[in-house]
Length: 159
Image 1 (cartoon, rainbow, N blue to C red):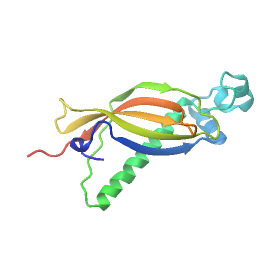
Image 2 (spheres, rainbow, N blue to C red):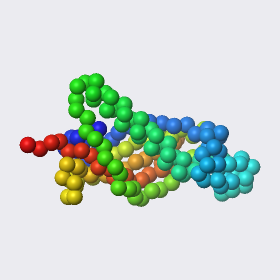
Image 3 (cartoon, rainbow, N blue to C red):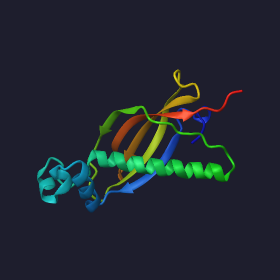
Image 4 (cartoon, helix red, strand yellow):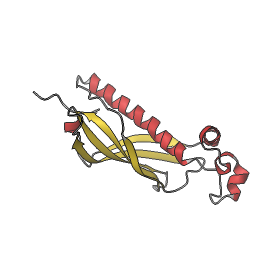
C-alpha cells in the first residue's frame, strides 16, 4: 500500500475481473443467500430477474477477493523495487451500497477503485482515512455494483 501522504483523490486502481459461472453462483447462494433465483434456473426464469443470477453479496465478495489480491501484487512490486510498503489498517465500514443490475451466468465483472476522499485521523495520529468508491461493470460496460469503503492507511513517520 502507498503511504497516506502519497495517495491522491481521483486515483483509480484497476482491481481485476471475475466471470460468474452457474455452479459458483449456486454454491455461493446455497451457503449465504439461498433464494430460488440464485439457486435454480427454472425458478429464476419465473422470477423478476428472468434467469439465474448471482447474489449481490457474491458480487461484493468477488470484489473483496480481487481487491486483496491486487493489494498483495502491488505491495510485492513495491518491495521488489526496494520501496517501503505502508500498512493498510482495518475498515470502519462502507456506505451507499447499490446493486445496480443483475449479474447473470457468464457475465464478467470488472472492478475498480477510485479514491474520493482522504483525511488524517484525529484519534490515531499515525494513520489517515481513505474513502474509495468501488465499482463493478459488466462486459457491456453497464454498472452492476457501487459502494464507498473507508480504510485506515499508515502515514509516513514524522520527525
